[in-house]
Image: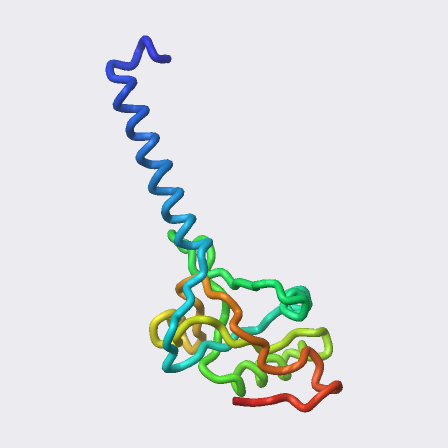
Length: 142
């Protein structure tokens, strides 16, 4: 293969450049955005395993949009009331799902597709807004 190529160093340099760009893009996607000041919070639905991880003190992140449309990002809501209504309409409260506030700002870290909002960046869960089941305690709506 190398004997037929006129400039093997150019091919190697090109592949190294592509690999470095790929690493930088994946690092930006894997590292969550955490904003110091948030004007309008983002609310998302946390799955039961994510709720359990939060209860044990572990950090939980939800993925943002991937390049080339490979993943559209997690579904988010502008208010905790909208997120709670989404859970109730789909019967997900009894299954252990919960509403969580994210580390981003709604105007800066989301995008719209029709009437639905999705995360444009990977975000960390700041706090769980209510219990996984409304039967245990009253649900707090902010």
